[in-house]
Image 1 (spheres, rainbow, N blue to C red):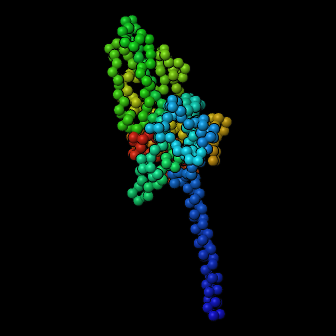
Image 2: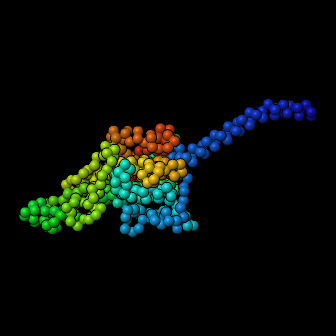
Length: 347
């Protein structure tokens, strides 16, 4: 008995430290894995929920007028036991997008209209591309940490007589708003469906611009006639459609969608800079609002051409923890399954 006990004791003395070291090593691996996940290395983080009565939510939630936000197909976040299933970082970031800005933040205006899509076609599971050897992850839209911007702002058109000396335009003798402003779809198919309406093109001329009515539109006032100023970085990433004839609307609305996607991408990558979301200082640490993941539709990336590589280079300096270079899931990327769904962002 004593001999057997001695053998066990010697085995214990030999093996105890290797066992302790292995256990310690596994603990460190699990800790680091959990830490990376909490920071978003896997492409997402945990929900930071907000109470229904919190001023952050009550001051944000879209109303029936759609200014500036509207839920696509009226699908709004669920509310359970007084808690809104929509991340407070999304609320802050989207609230920032509607505000006028310093031009260094992308442009000197706020977005006039953003259609927000929070519905995943696969319900609780992601509807983004998943590699064949990977398990389909939980949907960030379903979990409340993601949103898609499916439409952004407006193209606005003005109608006026072709010949001021002999005006025969059926609308009026003075320049007026033409029809309703055209919201800009970021999805390829819906964008391509926008075509010119019939009007008296013999006697009338219709011209359009992104975000504003030309100055001589008599029934447009205030911000409606204010031409935005865009940061030169954004205008080198994507072409500004400028002022154009209404008959070019099919082509120009696609240019506008590409430009708006590039603008939104610049805004979100620079939202934490001093003077942008926070007027007095940088957003640091847990206050950072740059989304963990930003995914552009493939059709837009194809149209961006070389600018896409320039945007990814800029993202290297913006996304925290080197995610642009080191994470296969986080930071700025592209997905063909978003072609009809718009710009995807999530925390």
